[in-house]
Image: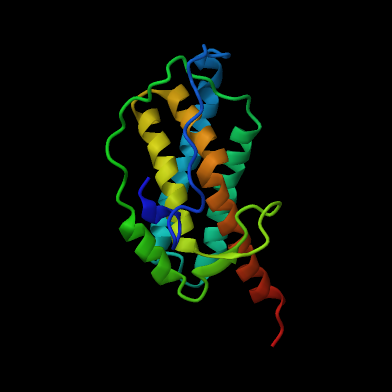
Length: 197
């Protein structure tokens, strides 16, 4: 993933090396295939949704619609989090090509949310005491980059590899970005509904 996908100051946190993958799979690929198919469908819907929002299709409902998109992809992430660790037979990840260019998506989202793109976030609510400035557009682009990476494995008929990547990056990266975006978007929607002028 490019450095710009993580936020104004780069990645929200340094990505740790991928864990060893040299053990034998604990579950046959066939048992995980339905989950891979489901997550791939969730990923495609999310990517289509955010592309439409970045293009301006959300109009006045753009914020609640983005909240819905993020909530749904986090549900998929929660399913990955509740699944036993996906273990691959090889420690070598197959090549998937260059990282996607998401600048147009990032710029489009920033243009649609000029009043709420910037927000403050605690990276680790149990360890951090000082908020750091971040941007919704960067967070969503970071999530998209990780999901696209896994989708390339899925499209190459490497379902177990795709699941491993989606699960690992959920814990290590995209889950944090999506969670931060969810809290920010929820705050915007809540203020719009509850604040009385």
